[in-house]
Image 1 (spheres, helix red, strand yellow):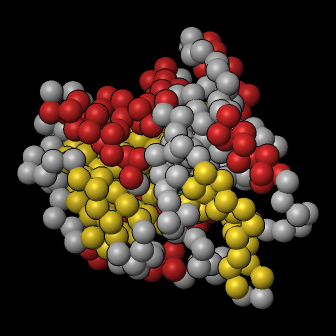
Image 2 (cartoon, helix red, strand yellow):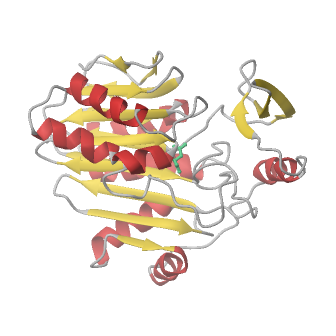
Length: 322
Ligand code: ASP
């Protein structure tokens, strides 16, 4: 059995995934349950309730889920529902489609009995107000402070020098970025899930890689499951999850598939040094790997031989596949 999740905020969800498969649950149920933990956690400001809003102050969510049989479901640009992963699963199970978006996805969610709620929290609203009040025309980037995980920094660049516009202390769990979860259950079956509020203050209407099957997530039960996090446009252009799985199908070793996926992303002419991509993969036989284009990508692993543990990719490299 194996559970992998992206980022430090994957710690709790990954434990939920592993507990679920340990007690005989399916990989599919487990990744959905894990994703829901993060979606409900208001201190996780990049997923579900409490997610950082778009440029209009609206929280718009993307999610996808896929099982070992190639069944998949996704929703994008969903507002007012805190568990897009479960709506995505419902799309997979009761609709003839793979993906629903915006008002159509919300209408479907309502028909399926999902309840709406306010997703903007005091903390995410406060960040939005600060972002909105930045000097006009100034391009700022939101990042966690290096000194304190509970602080966000609005950073900008002037004459090639990085400067801070503002700091905001928040009671967060130090989380950022999408959560992607992969699992291999007792029966050796694979599944994956990916859920996000997308890039902070994104353009209204923007959809990232997370709900795009083959970009943010891809599973082939006989081959591998892969998930991506980071600047979604890079992942979408490279179809990274599909790229990884397809190489494994063709017999390429995990480490080499990850290197090839990183190479493709690194060749993207839109790549800038403030962007990050993290990739996770589980092969059908249970071997796994992780990679990122630069340091700082954290992920969580739980397996038969390893209790739930936080790992880190150290700069432009990959974690040795087991
Ligand atoms: N991949 C997500 C997106 O582009 C964001 C992230 O993982 O940080 O929407």
